[in-house]
Image 1 (cartoon, rainbow, N blue to C red):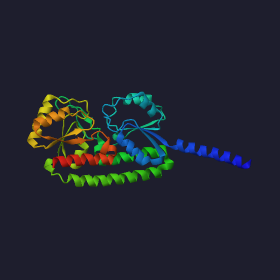
Image 2 (spheres, rainbow, N blue to C red; image 1 turned 135 degrees about the horizontal axis):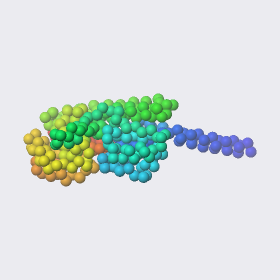
Image 3 (tube, rainbow, N blue to C red; image 1 turned 90 degrees about the vertical axis):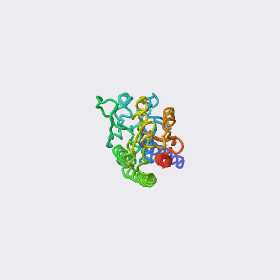
Image 4 (cartoon, rainbow, N blue to C red; image 1 turned 180 degrees about the vertical axis):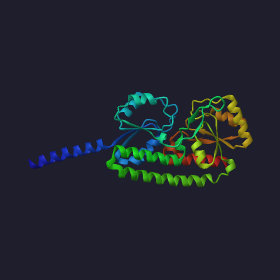
Length: 299
């Protein structure tokens, strides 16, 4: 009889502590594939991460679904790219979330690059933030610390775990940056002209000394004008640019036409808006793929 009672007590205690452990985990809803990886690496066993934007999905074209809204509402923390990336649905998202859910727009805590909203019109003096901060390893390091701090605020008893997770991930990023610098050094500075489908690599260009010429603007819904395409073809010819790069989420039609008219070749496909299938399944894999593709095509 005593043994049976002791077994029941053991079962009750086991279920209690198991449930308590699960409840202690931070539930994270992420609207960025890169932030999903950062959150998992920093949070480890103390977090459960739901990535609402999937690898290979264009975040510029994302539309908030009822299922994604429910997942965000059930979370403790919502991670956003920030810098205007979620502008089309941000208000609806915030209005639908319970007050207990913390929202962190990670990119808003990182210094911005800006450019004219429409550089073809002198009267238009607006500037817009470039949201593609993840194409800079240095900015991704800052994002890692923002996520670490958000976890620590929510769950201070595991602060040491979050610090350890962030430190380990930052070491990976430091090694990656060293490799990128060595690889980019193979390319003479006068050949560091990067022509891509849309304007997603300004942070990358700033870090590694590239000139950027893009077919579309900062978002993938900004259709290029005929005059812009004509000027870009002329610039490619003038600079002797060897390659134009496609993007894994965009229609290559205009890019292919530009290569036909300019004499440049298709240099390959790059990941511009976050993680993707194949080589781009991890942040380091994405960055190594992009740099290798760019440097090898332009050499």
